Image 1: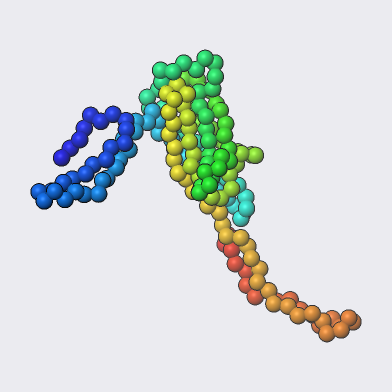
Image 2: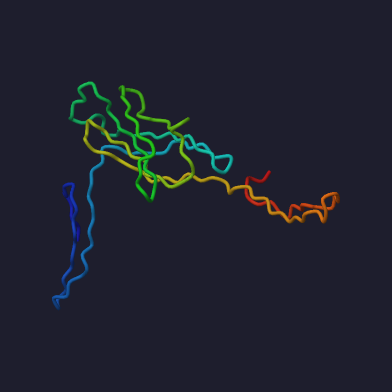
Length: 171
């Protein structure tokens, strides 16, 4: 069977066979989205603990919506940290025709490694789009050593041996 011409909503489908046995409902969210959000660039993190500059773009495939802005910003960009859904960055931006709807999270707003949901709320549509994204980083540099202290205060017989070094970026 085929269901079409559905409005934005949640639909659940069940099937009943000839013996009146019913399937477990399968539910689907049908949602129209006025935009398509993408991560254009995310700078690679060179060292463990550093952050990445992230550039997001909103496709704007349907243009401006019917809601007037009255001088306010068109977009509200939000970065949520997963799994807590804590807002880590939130910025409003204006938009001018002919200019791509982009934002770059840089400097104080650059993001450390982790899992994120990036969202862009468009005030002219009163709707938003989002994308999941993971920022990765190299493993921390760890020095594994063995050591022994001197036998007396005046003997220079202590030692440290570097057994191995792990993590970081090879090269």
